[in-house]
Length: 226
Image (cartoon, rainbow, N blue to C red; front, top):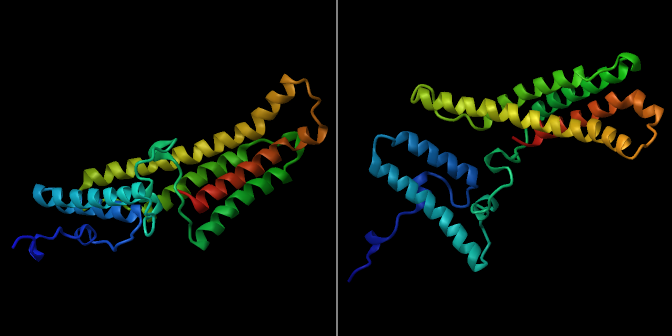
């Protein structure tokens, strides 16, 4: 008789060292660790990649059948293409201590701008706050995604660190630029295009408004995303 217990397919979760139902990030990190561990052993490396593909394909197959129970949302949508690709913000809530620091930086920029006399106000406080937020995001990425160990693979660790720095720089700068455009340049364009009379209170407090909105956007980004 064929098909004994020895012929059963190996458990892909067990092969990767993760629990069934683990989210996509955890599974991908497990695969990366296995790749690093077995980079000089092609056969074992191939088995790890097969296990990962097996988990993803099983989830997608369940999706096609309409059985969505117990399927992680990230794995469930593994075949979906994000508008911004791998650079899109990913939900990742910070610990309370980090939240407090991020909010304090944002609040300080707004308060300093508000306390500055209207005749000499500028956007320097929020620009400095944006730079601080870049380093805060870099530190957050280092905590949640440490990457390969430099002691094992220095080149891979350096590449991962460069990607981490570029992501923290680009995602924070993009958030600042988008908010700045929406709260500073866009209103001015609308005022000029439609010949709208600009209220005096808006002229006197434009920098405060811009700084407040940018501060909120940056605080939300660094506290709840990566």
